[in-house]
Image 1: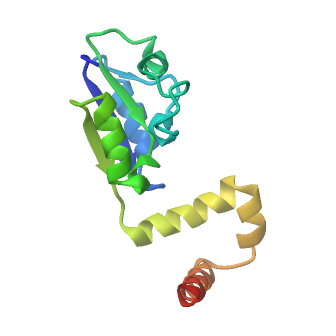
Image 2: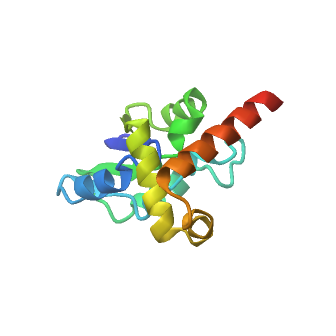
Image 3: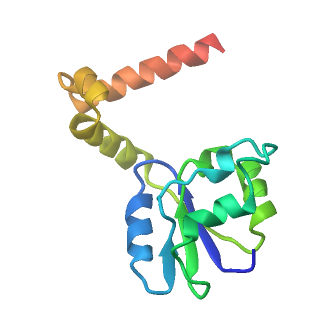
Amino acid sequence: MSYKHAIIAGVNKCGTTSAFRYLSDHPGVCGSSIKEIRFFLQDPYDASTNSVERYQAYFAHCTNNQMFLEASPSYFSWGKEIADRILGLIPAVKIIVMLRDPIDRLHSYYRSALVYDNYANALLSDIKFSEFVDTALKADKEVGEMD
């Protein structure tokens, strides 16, 4: 692909949605038709789903003189495997990695879950943040002991 391209990756609750929106507002940038394409998370050997044309379709509304932008935070979790897939299709890509202080991120997740996640809300509505942290640490320790 010969056009300019950038991808935002990162951890959840670190501002990838805001960055995608703000950057997409710039006239020289064109955001993908949906924010989280997750194109490179698909089976790389399945030619029917991983064609260049299929990826470019997410940018059909863009002009060639704009930088194409996508934001799929989940790419971050896959590390080098995803980076290699991305570079295989878009060698000159710019990758923006967004991180956030883990404690701030956890607190943001807790607040967000209380407001937006009906399943988590039912579980969290009766416990304070400190109790949530204690429960999470205990569960993590138990999982570690099972390994």
